[in-house]
Length: 280
View 1 (cartoon, rainbow, N blue to C red):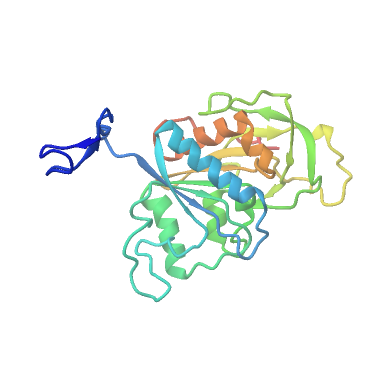
View 2: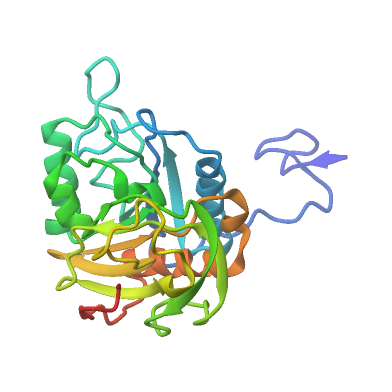
């Protein structure tokens, strides 16, 4: 039976008997907005990308800390995004209404000069956050300013996927639940153009257990597996952890990335003073 102020079906709308009242609107400041950006059109659309996106969205939803937009195009990397017709977009995410970007791109990405300028402005001048993940460090290899922002560049993964011990450099960084000596299975990247004087290494790799004679091993590269840095007013985090789908189900990985998102969104603070030499 349904009843309303005017009887069944009366004015004011009908509602089932015993139905609980509608939930109260949350009180307090609006939630932060995270743009999960995964443009892999010129790379390998690896099976981990979709699951990674879903995990990061769910972490925000369940924690109540942030709301997510998920996009696999790059039109939204602009202060004023446009539709495919060239006309201004009527809604959705833009660099003017999100607080951080969680980046899962790969290789070269089509982004015009204005979009590139807007992205650098978003982090450097607007003081927003940028989290690059795994293949994200190998994106935009022909764009030097992107390398300046993220702090290093991809330089192969000579051991492919393998087991190796991790080194926790900063156990106090938000969300860090790994322990030094824990053996982890992943595709570990080497990093070149590593800006050690700007970078605070959070997690490293014990390469003493790996074959240093393997083709592709580059002496002098960094093996930092997670780090944080400032870029102008903005907060930048990178981690190479996250190659396979099962990786994203690991509670330690989820805790690390949730901590990184919270830091990038400005919800928590951390000491990111450069610790030169920690990433070797």
